[in-house]
Each structure stands twice: as C-alpha cells, then as structure tokens.
Length: 111
Image (cartoon, rainbow, N blue to C red; front, side, top):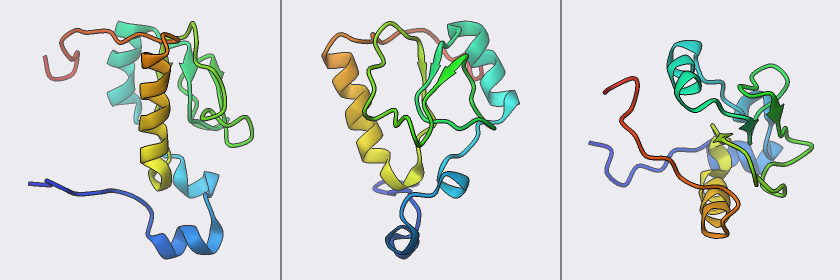
C-alpha cells in the first residue's frame, strides 16, 4: 500500500535545475486519455506543452496554468510532479471560487 507516499522529482534535482518542462511534464497515454476525452470533452489542458497537450487550449510552462483562470472550461490536468500540491490547491481554488465545477460519473475505464 502507498499510504503516505508523496510522489515528486528528487529534491536535489529540483533544487539544482528548477522545474524542467522536458522531465516534469508527463504525458498521458492515449489508451488512458481517449475514453476520458470521449466522456468529458475537455477544452483546456492546464499543464501541458506543445508535444503532449490533450485539449484544444493548453497552458504550458510559459503561460503557467497556476496563474491563469480556468473559468468556463472542462479541465484536464496531469501536473508536474515537482509541484503536485500547488496544482491541487489551484484546482481546489478554481472549484471553490466557482470558476469550474466538478462532474460526477462512473469511470469509463474501470466502470
């Protein structure tokens, strides 16, 4: 069991190089993403780059999805592992502020 496990880049990596788009931004495999996109039709990928964006609009490291409003979008986010907490706080703030809303349904992958 992974209780209490905290994923992330090794602290020495991040301290030495900072957040790095090439290693921090993880892509989501098409097999995992396709059924999710079919169900929710995401309009914004909040943490992406030109090579792995999953939605028509995306925020990359330069446009910084943490600093942008997500209002009016169906948001997909596979955040950089070096700052998971920041992305969770941002998503919570967007929901609590009414900019985005949560959808509930069964998972198309696991049922």
